[in-house]
Length: 404
Ligand SMILES: *Cc1c(COP(=O)(O)O)cnc(C)c1O
Image 1 (cartoon, rainbow, N blue to C red):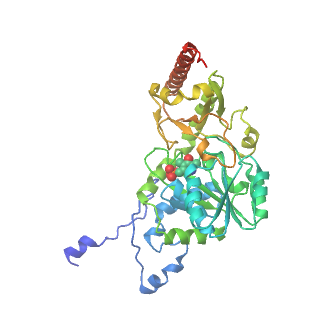
Image 2: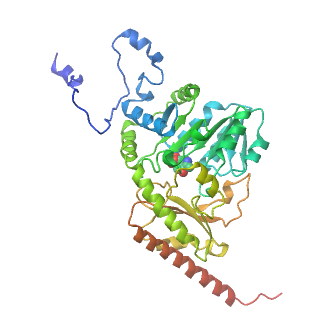
Image 3: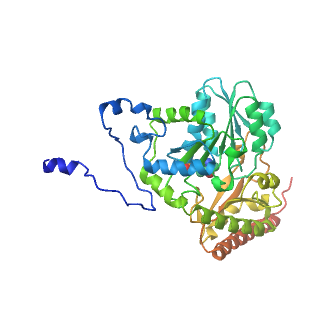
């Protein structure tokens, strides 16, 4: 064999006795076959086989297997982001004339997908009150193919009665999908509570280091594997094994990170709840939270993300008061090692329900920094909101009364 050929070919080296703890990164577009017959029949390798790089490598298969096991499903697909997982979980099952029901508190890009693309494809899109299974029942049609849930609701944290909603949907022959990003499979297992499909934004807590985007779709029933796999393939969607390796590395510490964030977030939520400028703290593990009973019944724990609703007068000062933060960063995509704060606008993302709170609420994600330094930051923000609120109040009282 000439040197030029040797440069190109991969020599066989023994792998016997090489048993690493870490998952290898297998980069591959091309998969080769032992003979022409094996190549010709590659399409028959099925979802567990390796016909082409797009359909997975041992690295991505390992991550899929981990998720399948934790979710209690039949199979898992990886997607390039959490939102891609949501989109690819619904698209295979919808066509012109079909009807989809979506929780009013779903992740806003999911609303956008439904209102833009699903409607353009001729799908009837309707939103439902996440706290009312009766509303789901009333809106079911013969053409309803899917009920899309997210529990707790994005930012406002409403807990859905998933077993009841799933029973209603199944009675009408519709599938139930759940975006489980807040809870992760450690805190909630939607497939055990009636869902057919569960998605995760692995970008958040599961990868956990704010350096990779990925999503997953896990199905309970093997009959759902084929339609999803086929559409993902036709659209040419796959994930990089390097990214999958980052998610696998983060996954190993998910348990300790999540339990830490859970403890600190709940402690902060309880302390913030008593503040005079705070109207409500939206955290399902608080006794005061309206859906606390449902959360306790179905969930195995809580997570590090919650929201603060300030009084109406104070809420207009919240965004500017974030300048006082020294340790928290301001940004979206929570679930990493850094704690985050983000002013969130709600009213524009509701149609089946009315948002009665102030337009801006504060979403908090607790990371892994020293909790006393984080609490000092919370106090700085609360003090800034208080100072700005009382300055505004005294200015208003100094204004001369308007005549006529
Ligand atoms: C962030 C998020 C997503 C989207 O994840 P990306 O990977 O950023 O696309 C989906 N659902 C929920 C509930 C999220 O918070």
